[in-house]
Image (cartoon, rainbow, N blue to C red; front, top):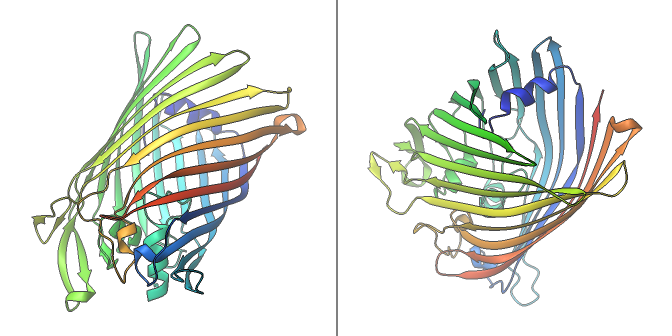
Length: 391
């Protein structure tokens, strides 16, 4: 639950009486220059993933809606081979957890209550080769669509309140997230090779503001996350338990929408900082992470049914001191940094009077991946197709 934009409550209200089903396929691939012989991070040649998601939104009663998300994903990481050698592949595939969310207004339209749950349908017991694949597929710098399959049981309750201050529409939200005993992607992104983790619970606080001036619209959002202590079971240290606590994080967003000829363009800025985490009651130095992104998206009408979409973006993930080029493990991907630029080209095509929306797109990225002392050129491509039906 987030109030990154002040129009959250109004947007939720528009969905209440609309049934929506969305599905499609997303194929993502990264290739890395100059792979070395061996089995460590420097030997990774490529990583790819196919995701088939499904999203369903249905009204329950007036003012109350239920939405659900699930996906099938298959990821493959190719390692080794040196100069034309055979190498080997690590795979991770299966269904994800099922995400459920119930949203409804309380009394007045400016108060929205959300209740969420994650049902543990995804795999949580992984073998050594699957964990190696997860180390790459869950890397925040690569941004795969499905970084992990199973995260265990979790539940969230949140509240968003909207108001008005002059020309600004405002929203404030808060949520408490109860998290289960398994969160491999979070452990790996924190730089912990052993992913047996009870991550602790989380409190999310968000503020948003939205203003329309003439033909322009700007939105500002701020989200803070605070985590309670959890527990890490270190299999490499004799199956011992240690206290583990993620550091607080802060994220900010800014969007500016402007008409451009017959179309519309959006400029956006994103930034997120997560402070050092604690292990065994002690702060782990240089375990922080910093992310930033800037981009534009332009939508140009071609016909009454079709629009052309093009996006340009640049992003940076700071590589903390924990990142290191492992000789036998792929875990340094999880704490890697990246500087990359991307371009996305797509089409939006409406069918059946707008009740069906077809959205194909293609995306390309290129940048420098920092594995902690070793920098490699990374090239990413994505192909996607989304079909949405509203009835």
